[in-house]
Length: 259
Length: 259
Image (cartoon, rainbow over all chains, first blue to last red; front, side, top):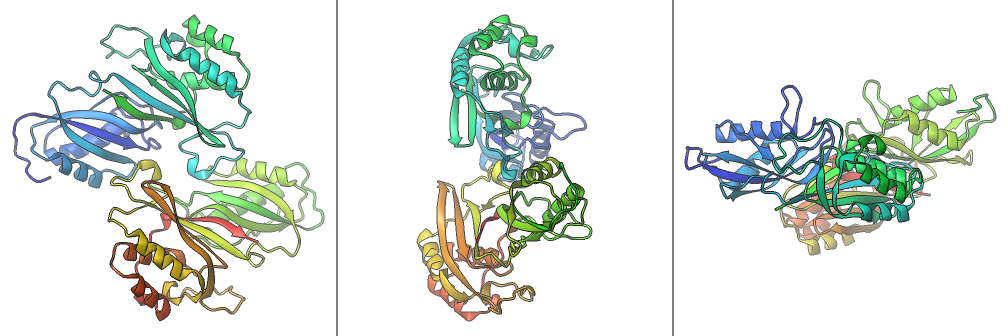
């Protein structure tokens, strides 16, 4: 926070991690504590400017991130190193700045992104360990992993994901005119321990609540409530009422943003 | 919670895990929320008796457990399975009952124990990840692991640990007349990831704050503030004022109780 005199305009890119527990999501809100709001208020202190922080995406209340990317423009001369140190000193431990760097003026955390990777963590043991309770969904019914793998393979590629989009939730900022069509590069299961696995989704973008709707429906398939053929039918139907429930927020984490 | 009629007296042994964040430790207190207090109040509901829960030890405010053992006596006929299900349904997610079983009337969670194992978790990366912040100590200064290993080896065996006991803290319940003499079976470092390791201590018992005082002093040795020879001198001095600071509670976890 050394020199704060106004200088040439700069674009600063931040790499951000957060524990979403207790926050009302990423996006700034008037009365509730949000990740964007918490960081913006500290940046304002540090730069003595009114800062608008643009995130690569929005995460819902309770959703976590390890690799959120955001950017802001400033005329302050505060070094990137001082931004990291200063923000981490001022922010609560639930929000950490992993790095800051100068970016090209044309860089936009959202519009420059080529994709994102999310994971959804599931704990399958009988009792949910206290230290995992805020970061994993607890599922005690037996799951058919063959069925899950079959469904995940169906998701890879370019599809209209309307069946997994919450109604009335289409993002107004979507400047690509691609509707509900998205490409999933990879949809996979990674086993972390005998009782803990993650669904991992990498794609060019995701609709609002899409991963939580996918996971809720996948778990129905894992429990045998729907078959892989039924799952394929849901995807093809482009009808949200066909899909399963929305999985809770706390199992979800944004792993990284791709550029 | 089926049949609650009074029957023959039973001794029930519980295996308990908890996230100590936000609790005032294990031991029941009048005005503060504690692990013992939370479980006892649910047991009273379930058995319609006034239940006293005896833990294998006390953990301080903020300390976690994965394998605390506790017992209580009851004349209720509630099955062990129903005790586990009922307690977990009533307790907050931060406290979990991993199991309940009938024990011999002579069983005492504390006096029957032959030892305990604790771990103290240390994160050494530059930025403390939000999801680890409540369960690991963040240490950014470089640590000399050779020195740490040398010090840990000095701790193994039977010693008078007065230098690592908080003054005035001798446990009034110590019926063994062994003063500050304890035996550490194993003191080791386990690397979990490149940036996360745990100190693991297994012994026949530990004095109040002993592990936190050991870890604070070990970290001083790891940073080069004291040599392994100096560490040996501190142990031999039997003088608390010689040792390093008390490491914070949140890195500490009771792994298991040995019988």
